[in-house]
Length: 422
Ligand SMILES: *[C@@H]1O[C@H](CO)[C@@H](O)[C@H](O)[C@H]1NC(C)=O
Ligand SMILES: *[C@@H]1O[C@H](CO)[C@@H](O)[C@H](O)[C@H]1NC(C)=O
Ligand SMILES: *[C@@H]1O[C@H](CO)[C@@H](O)[C@H](O)[C@H]1NC(C)=O
Ligand SMILES: *[C@@H]1O[C@H](CO)[C@@H](O)[C@H](O)[C@H]1NC(C)=O
Ligand SMILES: *[C@@H]1O[C@H](CO)[C@@H](O)[C@H](O)[C@H]1NC(C)=O
Image (tube, rainbow, N blue to C red; front, side):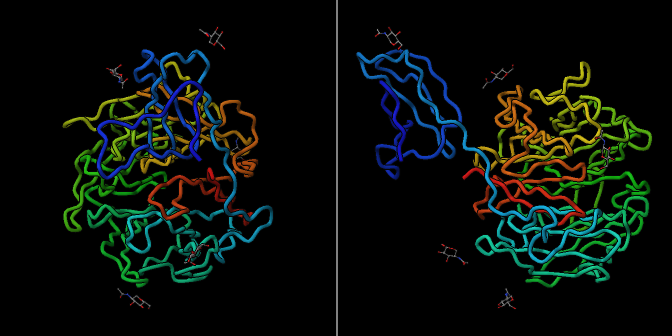
């Protein structure tokens, strides 16, 4: 259904393309709207979920009436297993150690599969979405053998999806064991998993000798690919970025233990946490968000030429970000594609245990809440976020290439939700 605007007519975006017949069809909720200009000319731009359109005022019309904007679509659950639920796809989520993330199992370029694993037990499932019904394409229960030779027998095991082949696809899984120096990267040939990298001595010179070590995939060279590994040690200022040349990992950035952190951010708190982010709506995860829960501090670092510099900082004063004050030591964050543009350029900040969650859009360095502004503590899409165990991440539920859904889960309680804007 095309919305209408009092006194205004929708005109096509220039330049009109022969392949895009007029008038431009628009549908879906208005997500932003700007107005200004002269009668008879273009007075505004209305941005919808998938495209923006221009508005032209008809001569004689009264355009002082506010242009009606649809309220943002609320989130609703597309999958839910609530209290004492059964997890998802046969994985029971019955251990508080359970962790989950999105994965490109079938090399489609989409993060539309769900990995669930239990550090210390050998258990790991990869779950596929068959039209809203979830079933495993790979499963090893507790006491199982892990995956691709990686045994998952340490409680310190952590994993993330990685673009090992520079293909633009997150179709490998990197497993690491902070404190032990172990890191493996596992490939997938049609459901058959094998290691392409296995080291017990760290990687690219980074020793992985602290249980606090954390790693994630990063786009260091603005290629649009998450084919670098960022690894850091909160509390010591240690931050490394490793490039991959056919399995030969070498540092392109390294600050030892102790070190100076990155881009001016000192990383001197053991609570510091970091992840990749598309800060400038480029479609590239080439910025790093670093935040210090409990202290209100957020830093966003950009790789600019040969140096890292801050693109955003709330370190002092420590006001958090977009109204989210980050004063609880359990505050946590991840990226999401809120507008369904194919870009992970929005941030989700949440406070497990309190029901508070905000989604922030970035307007040229000003973070604006588009969800949860009132801090009502009612969670999101029916998920109450009332446990301090709650965790979340963005998921491509519709297999659309957009990480526009949010998976929320409660390890130890069997609870798993997927919420999205319908
Ligand atoms: C336009 O609409 C506004 C608000 O409804 C009204 O106050 C104003 O008098 C109108 N102006 C004209 C020129 O009709
Ligand atoms: C999913 O559901 C849609 C519509 O209900 C149907 O057209 C499609 O074939 C289904 N796909 C699979 C893989 O079951
Ligand atoms: C993958 O495995 C399935 C089922 O075992 C088989 O039908 C399919 O041909 C295989 N695909 C490739 C690319 O090997
Ligand atoms: C964003 O902010 C910068 C610096 O304040 C300014 O130069 C630039 O024009 C702004 N861009 C937009 C699109 O508003
Ligand atoms: C943070 O979470 C832990 C464990 O889940 C809990 O024991 C602690 O009370 C929480 N802290 C706050 C400030 O809520």
